[in-house]
Image (cartoon, rainbow, N blue to C red; front, side, top):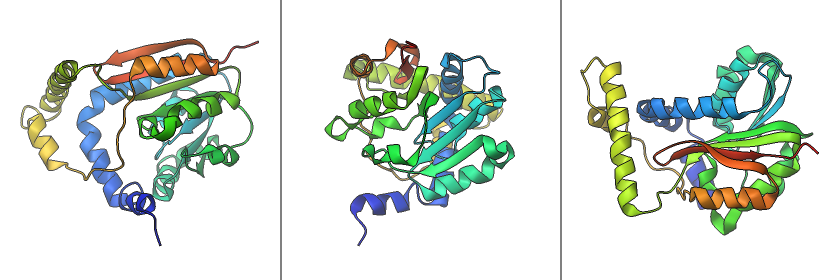
Length: 249
């Protein structure tokens, strides 16, 4: 018998139709998503021509990895995700990278995911995924696990959704995002559609619970783990790119 979490996975991230609807729904967030991807790439400290090894956590079909490998022609990547369907889609869409990218199946819910990957990495990255891992301070523990498999001088860079510190600030952030994304929709459609119309046409059922963290707390946890030069590298409203670096010594 399937557990509630297994059933939810099959209905959402295990279902191609759902994934495609979710992707379409997020298209109107492209101005923010693109900036997050760019910030992650720019904060990986290794030169673009360096033959680094990247680990993409909860990678989905590999959108972040695709951006990194495109900008880093000698880099290779391992994309880890729990969804078999996401992995299948990733292998299809990223086939042109050949052996530079590997997809493996594993869940970040417990330390067992470490057995799914081997060796050390120069960079561990993630995009809009780790906010799901909050039960029993799971994300705090996950930072420690990531630190273990980074080589000296390696980095962890996370693009994610954060929690506003007050309800009034949350409202201000939502209004700012609506203005930004509304302008993007107007430009893309030649003024033919509004953001509200696009959102209504691309609805997707809710997936697993979001439990966004407070940015200040996430940075404290990274410092506790041993990461150096921990900071928020980019932020707009409740969207941020943050991380740190494993000391080279």
